[in-house]
Image 1: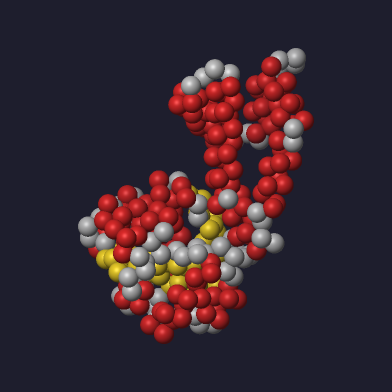
Image 2: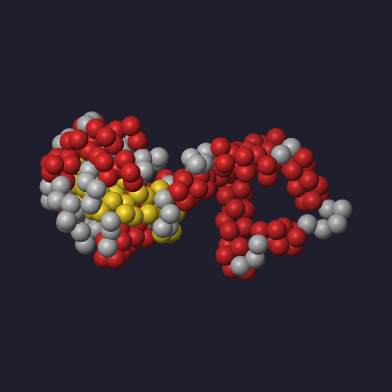
Length: 263
């Protein structure tokens, strides 16, 4: 396994490190993490005492073969200025998870010939259930295989050739996980209003969603076909669905996704 440097000790950097080590894909000694805040780095000791932790970005990239930029988009330029002269672009791979920082910008910040990946994961990467969409430029088959294999340990991977599709996947998955949480919260509140305690409502909603997912995966049907199996003429389910639609359920979901799409 290639040595990995994670620049950024925030939520996503932590989730990636935790996921990789939980999955047993890498050893703690093969992963280095940097962050300007020593306080942020302390939490990484919960994952492994073997992790190499540093406040210096330059230090951790020197021996690493895959460099993951897990920082906010507006910090990418600053990080690039710190490390770009330390990199061997023939041997090292740059992986950016900074939303909206395109290949054109990354090539200017680093090197036009550098092997660069853009990846849009979601926070479920921490529990090895992310959807990570991968796109690459100047990367050979071995490098693509190395990076996709890495992120497959953290969930599922979709490889796309067209960079613009990353933004669509980001809306559907990276942003979408928050939309899923909002549905869960709304369903819990509805349950409470009907007399169910919040913790019990949460359990019921989560299991209902798990069951819905399992049905779709097992039966390989369109969601509407599964809906047809639940609804009966004049029944309560169709009345509930129609009330949701009357209040803009489907339209709100589509509009929300499109609003978060960076086209």
